[in-house]
Image 1 (spheres, rainbow, N blue to C red):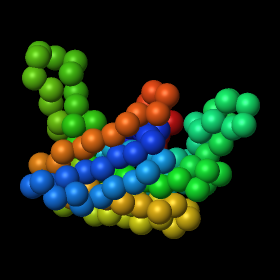
Image 2 (tube, one colour):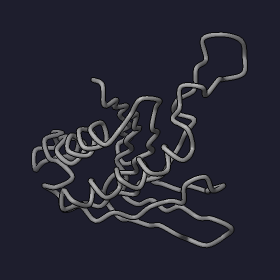
Image 3 (spheres, helix red, strand yellow):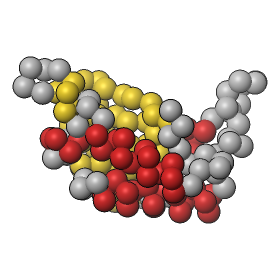
Amino acid sequence: MRALLQRVSEARVEVDGEIIGEIGEGLLILICAMQGDGEAQADKLAAKIAKIRIFKDEDGRMNRSLLDIGGSALVVSQFTLAADTKRGNRPGFSTAAAPDVGEKLYEYFAEQVAAQGIPVAKGRFGADMQVSLTNAGPVTIWMDSEA
């Protein structure tokens, strides 16, 4: 699985003008299931994200995790993280998991983040979503379950 983490002071996702997920301080997690991914990859990524130390401590150093600050996560599916841009000018997405597998892993991943003790809000798989955020820092980190 691939994830793009954005440290936020606030974030929300809308579908058809309705806010369906919203958080204050925490992480916006854009997530993509890749071909061959399963629950093991989702478990690994959820555990790592819960503990990654990218929030400031009292000295201003990135030394605190989402768990440490009592932050929330907004989990949004984004198959375009699978983009292959090696050839031509149009990205290919053949390395992304099939939609039915991707949706199951997206839901499972969100459950695993919540199981870490983190409040989770979500987008809607496959929907045309409008995502708004205030990137704190800015801090944006790319993660892969294979790393």
